[in-house]
Image 1 (cartoon, rainbow, N blue to C red):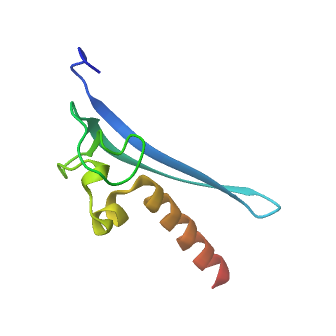
Image 2: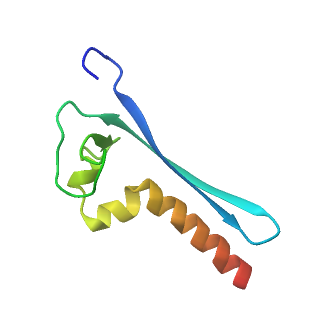
Image 3: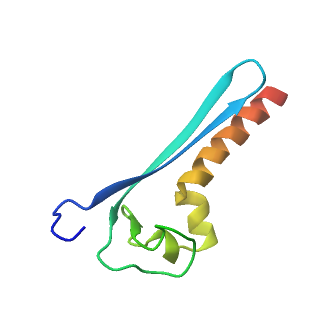
Length: 89
């Protein structure tokens, strides 16, 4: 990313649930930036370079509690859980 002025990025998770009849889509997005130097030891892949907008931490620097609020995959999975809970009610 050297030479790029705009380092904005979006983390996106997308899941599909198929019930045998139809597909339901669940997604989430988290805005952030790509940092110049990797930070943190948690997670994998691009977690040390993606800083969540407004938090000032990369995914790799987050606590489990922060991950449960800002993790794109967690947010999308919570949407699936909410959908399934409504189906069982």
